[in-house]
Length: 404
Image (cartoon, rainbow, N blue to C red; front, side, top):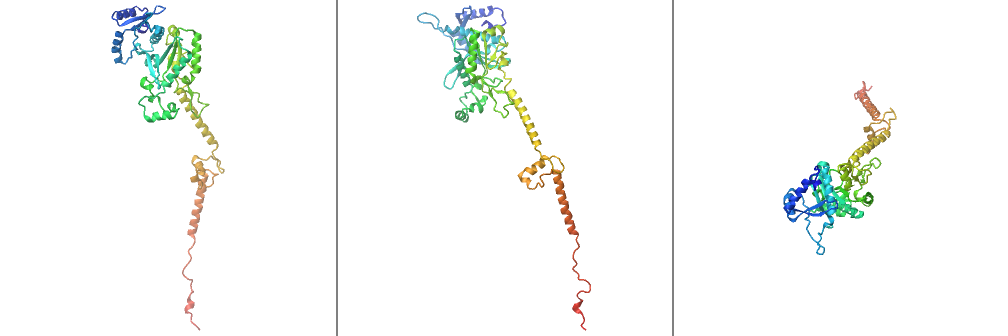
């Protein structure tokens, strides 16, 4: 509580005094004391009611009330087995807040994500920090009390939840998704899915990002768990190849249907700070800052550049190939224009293209010569003398010749 509410204070006295004051008013209680003497404070029933009345109108969800229940035989307080885990969750939130990732009221715990079969996958911690470049991040805090394959199952559920349609989705979309297994990937935009009703856009490709924070464990165990996550959970976090005509030229990856997954340890957060390069993205070798780890430098932006470059190169190659095939005039040696080339090859104009081995200029000369010859023939025919109709002198006199 001290690190979360007063990260700049060197001592916890102010936070402790406030908690003691709230305890005097029966609003909080100490549930347990850890081995390192850290105290786990929880709201009483009265404090829980007042917190709901104060925060929920502002859109801030209050966690479930931790009731005081005792074992009837031993008299021990029940439900304290999660205290170490709760302390790790709060410490993670404190480290994020101290690094400027999330406002203290921007954190929520135990947020449920209901799947289609009714199962509810609860995130240990949800942070919304758009001002830090992290609009939303779901965190799973693991003290190595869970098997690595259980974490893979959690990742699968987040992936499945990100593919759900909202209850009021139109019938056409629902029928399409039911009839085609790939429809949700190719035809249903993220804006039409359930997760966009719950969380803001991430500002990056893919589904809602998930972080696994390991606490109170060894580096070897963390490495083994991450290795299982990378191999067994590859279907859920790994990008795909883009469906493109230029497979060799486009090396970018399609992250649109993947869950971005980052991992770190609480010890690294406490030692170096959550704003340092302590986050490793599954599929990458080195650790990065949180925003760098969530970014996709080999994703959509690179794809657009490579696709445009490959398309321009393909057009240039096609143009060069076409130019190499351009006919050359057998008479003058000049290349055919596009218009003349089309005239001799198009079915509608080829029959009247004349000599197809000559260019447009030479063909025009041929047409001009033919027209000139035809015109000369016409003029010559028009210049011939007309035959005379009047008979010659003396003709016809025989009709009236005097007989002797």
